[in-house]
Length: 263
Image (tube, rainbow, N blue to C red; front, side, top):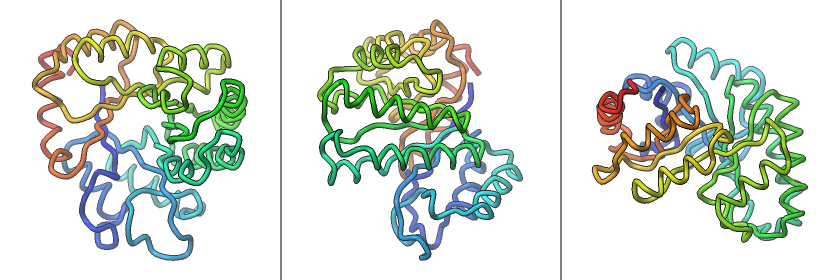
């Protein structure tokens, strides 16, 4: 299993610490295998001055090639993206009936992922709510866009409940009903050890990628890793942490992984 981190967790001012020339080398220097790029909107044609991340209109073909080349020169992978713009979109589009444009932006994220070599993209509807049929229609269309780019959309299991359609168990049903290999679950195990193991087992073979909050001494990670092995997941463990935890978590994760017989 490999370790990655969300680039958006850095607290340094983005104007002086840009994605390509500062974040990527820093992430490699700290010992990570990969980076998750968070897709966040910015004004096109102006330097990004606040809010870390990337935006499909911010990077033309040349810019995307530069991003890929820099990562390759560092032997750093870009395995996943995260469509974080969905939070802001939901603020102005609180009902799933308003999400047709959102699916168009997901299509742009899929194209961006293809161009930079990412395999999976975390998606969600923010705080927007709606009916089962609305969500199914939108996710079916999203999966079609993902298929065209040979990438996978992974709906984050831990925040599916915000749709008003139930917990991760109903997301499993949604994924099964749609039946596309390009729509799976981006699992984020929550709370105590028992719940984290349950989250993993419940998502099962539908897991396309994994998020983790800050590593905790109160979690039995041997059981967590065992559950991941049980469902056949051994790809990236992506840390959703910020500030000093980006630095401190690398050695801690490798120690936990070694003790769990993983690395």
